[in-house]
Amino acid sequence: MKLKRTLLIVVEIGVISVAPILLIGCNSRKESLAVAVSSESQTEPTLAARKQFLADYRHAHEKSDVDAAMRLVCLDHVTKDTIDALRQSLADDSRLPLKSVDIVPLEKNEHLEYTMRGVRYVPNLAPVGKLSIVLATGTDAVSTTTYLVGVKNGRYWIATSMKAP
Image (cartoon, rainbow, N blue to C red; front, top):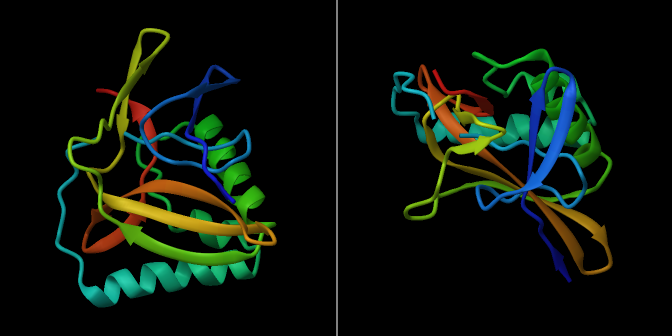
């Protein structure tokens, strides 16, 4: 059985709202973050940078080290409430065994921004793909968490949402 639900967390003045969205696949629990686009300059990452990013995530997950996982997140223009929600999502995922992790391509014409309560949100890095995290939830059952991934200074980063400038 494959379990995948797409959810969005938007944090506004200390209130966390969860709403369905067709933006990215996220974890099967209540927490997840939508991420959307900024015009940060990119330097093309190397294959070694990709392998290192995936190894760093794998190591953080296997050690249940949320601080190490958070060091993979671009926090530019991100609120404390969004950081807290992302930390919780990463902590929740770290409780389940990791089956696989990879960077997968964005889907053609994928919608990468959203509006909630009249506020437009975009990714804090221009997405180049998605970090797909497959977790074992039981015999033959899996849950998938997906975060947008961007590149900054030749390095991969998990991107998160910010209010559009």
